[in-house]
Image (cartoon, rainbow, N blue to C red; front, side):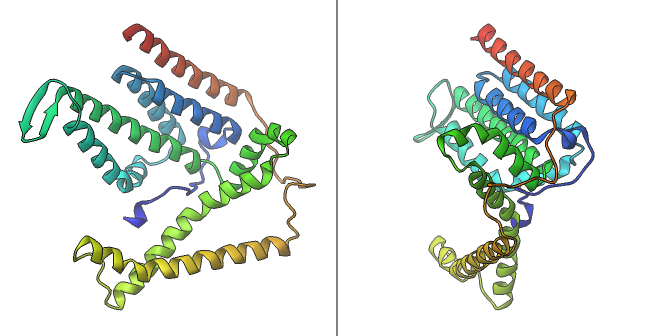
Length: 267
């Protein structure tokens, strides 16, 4: 399961989506999220799904990879589905004791599942097609107006990107620790819930030690390179927007307007 988590990973490529300005990709991702939460019917949600499919086809990211990345959220999807199916009032289809399945529950459950899956896939596409360095620069540039109120924009962007970048590293470290503990005879898959929780202790302690050690090594490496934050910092690669970036943003806004229009027509 841990190997299926691909959050924070970057997959190099030369697709149209890879070449987009990262600032525009962040904004387009925000517009896509607005699509999903603005839609209040299946047709509007379908418009957002079409936008997502087109984006993935243009990015040339294997669809198999996206299905793999969805495995960790299966428990969340199941839990959300159960809550909506059995605990929403409406036209009852099936009833057993205090549990009942309603038409509204099934509709809401399907709607929420599609929304969650689309949200995860759309957000993941940003990190799949954008390197951590350019993502940091893009976040800093977008937040640069906040410097006027003395907000440490560069440090904030750096912390966000480092946290995102270290997710795959910590997952790999967790997998190694679990394999080492299993090789020593640790049983983590049987017993009661409390026993399984106690079995995680030999994993969590080395993981925390490793995480603090990596953080200390990173801080030392940054100090050795005379890192002093954003003051006087120059960039090897400058961000430049092109007509393609504005066109992509315009298309995303058109899709959002279409979702809003469908809400008004069907509301």
